[in-house]
Length: 227
Length: 323
Image (cartoon, rainbow over all chains, first blue to last red; front, side, top):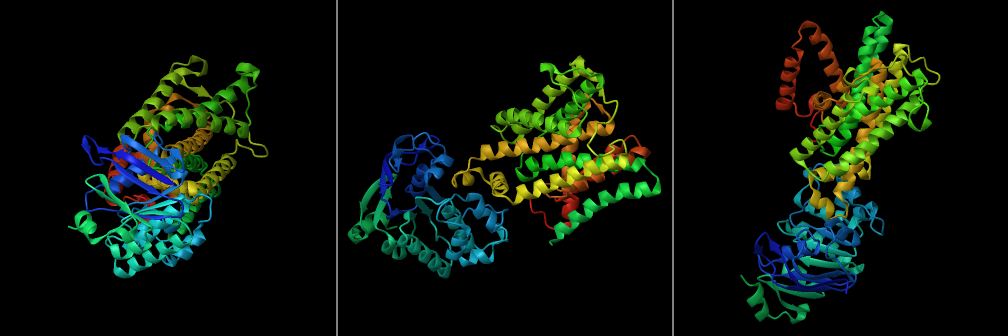
């Protein structure tokens, strides 16, 4: 397994957010992390990236326990995060945003610009002047520039126009076809399920269900994902 | 060529024009004034790397300015008196050697100060850099071997191979060349991956960590480079005045460097140059009219902070890129 999360418990100060999340991603696999709002999806991702290190449980990446590592070390091991809310560096240009993150590997500036031609057009513009969709592309591009073994997408299409969403899903499918391992959080089931090899649903800070998309019955959906 | 590049070029050429005009008009005093502008600009370009690009408000850069000054003063006095330094090393009056010593010494001290200070942020960083600079200031005051409170004179200006540094205009060109080199360094850094990461660290540390970059190391490197440039300026300043004193290390000096940058434009290439020119001109022309010239400087600073956050360069070249 590339990523193996077992029984993690994470706190925000005194309040506990995760009560035992189990999750795994194999090399080349796309895993969908699902759950209703506030169930702990983003907290799980922040725990994996060690932005909010868990207090209990174990996270192993490429066979190595990442306990005690600082966030930047985890990123260097090969976890590329596209954080919720398209967080770029607003006062840097598109090019600077990408170059700052660059690590050697197959992903280079020109390949990112081929994947997202709009970024090539806006290369010297400040990230703060981009549209929401372009900022999202930039955030994905920035994560890819680190040449991650695992790409984590947290709500990559939330709040974007349908046309832009389609573009982003197309690029996610391209990445999958190239063998990129991806852990993805998203609310659009219709797009997410066809791409996912496996799904993990969390409820109230615990892993409630794991399986392949075909096994995700209406009953499970109603119980764990319905509003 | 962007508008800012043109404005920067104009500012630098304006500085160059002062001594040329002064030579033609026989007003040699203005050459000294322009040299002072160039040296203070160089010191502020150094601080601008930390402050403008990295957002590190160092209130202790006088330490590096002073260390550079003392490097020049101490080496020159040993050479003049033909006394060896500790470990039997000779003193020297060769500027290139003095510059290297000033740069290395400032860099090493910055490495130590930065390694500790950069573990803090915001107002604590400001205070801890100030505290370190004050420690060095009091050390210089209580060091009788090199003049203590009275400072140290450099009897003959140090030499640069092939240049008559005793000639004011020649010495100006030496300082001006180093200023241009420092502006080149600043541009290179700003355009590099290192510069992008440094600016990103200022905007959001956590986001930078998620792309695998440790903000601390980037900042430490920037702080050290910044100090080295300011240290070099200190060595030139000592040669300009042919005198080094603890006042170069005082917190007023640190404040002055910050003021120069704010006046000229924080993070802007030519900001420190414009700031230094304005500051020295103010000091000279208003200082000639009233002893309270700093009151007017204060008002000007207030106006810049309230109405022109990009400083002079921002005012002329449009929207501040950094703010």
